[in-house]
Length: 75
Image 1: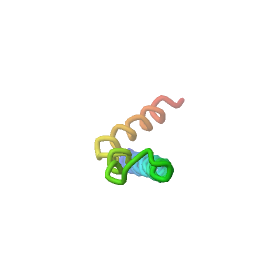
Image 2: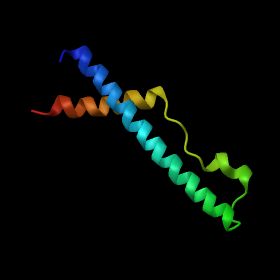
Image 3: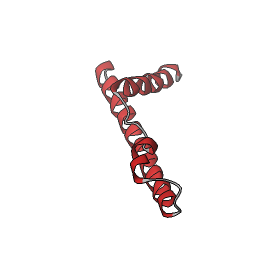
Image 4: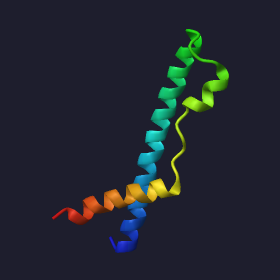
């Protein structure tokens, strides 16, 4: 694997990781919020406040750099 392929793979892995993490966080927030509404602890208009923010391109690059650090230090 050449350096360009490695970087591409690391960005792909970082994106996949952050996407899955975001999906899990959203599912948890939705379920928690649903339970709060049922028990009268939250109002529907508060929904956006509880939802996790979507990851950014900078988050993907940062995650890829962490992965690259792992690969770079493996000997």
